[in-house]
Image (tube, rainbow, N blue to C red; front, side, top):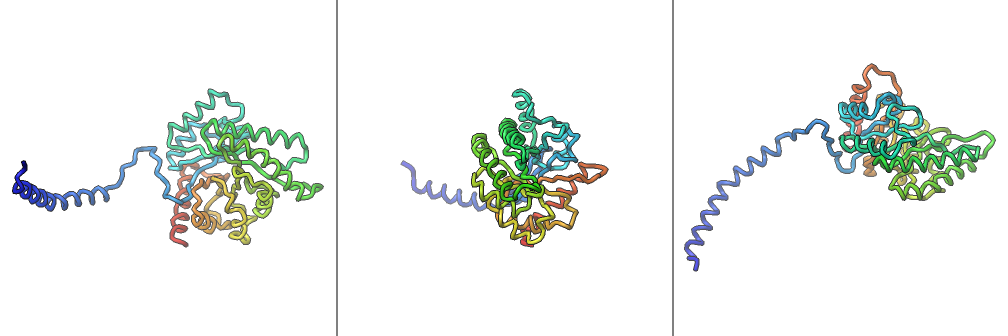
Length: 310
């Protein structure tokens, strides 16, 4: 039998130990909280919850970077997501013609790096008056959906593109929507998004909204393009498509003041959009990596202001 006196002594000793130890533990925890986390080189920082992320599309600044060079340069710039432009002879050589082994190799290179492949920017367009060209564009887009899946990416960019002089606009809008409806099931099968970019004369957000009304498939989404045509009443135009936004959009030179980047960022933060804002630029600069760092820093300032409601 345990002596009650021994229990009382033990309890008293334990309370004294805790009183003496807790301040030291608290001090240690405080020091640990204040100590900055040492991040390994190439370790990707997590984006704050509910916050859009900054990425890069190869377009022109990355057109001559093969995959290893692209990954190296993006790590230097601390840019953690990228989209590959296809069908234009880019140095990365990620195209429909990749074999199964080559696809696995590209996927592994990204998986072994901190850089996330977030999309393929195809040049496929669905405004073609020629039925055979339209059919080819749809079939190519299906091929790119599989390629994106095989590479571990999440979606493809496509174009509505343009209106044609002798074809009623409503007919072109209906044709584009029909092409997207054909792609929706394939996108769902591969776990992908079809991202219709606001590009070309058929790419104003008012037109994009009209197209999306005729294509309710959940895997077909809108890709904003930070286009000056939509500056007038931008918030209203944004609201036309806000519920159909995909997980990527395009930014251009953030130093330019003609487009309301601060307003767009604020609207994105307000709706909790956590996709990738991908820099797409063609400006001639002496050092593209350094210029990319500068653009990222401007973006981070925009997001910080948007979080503060400014």
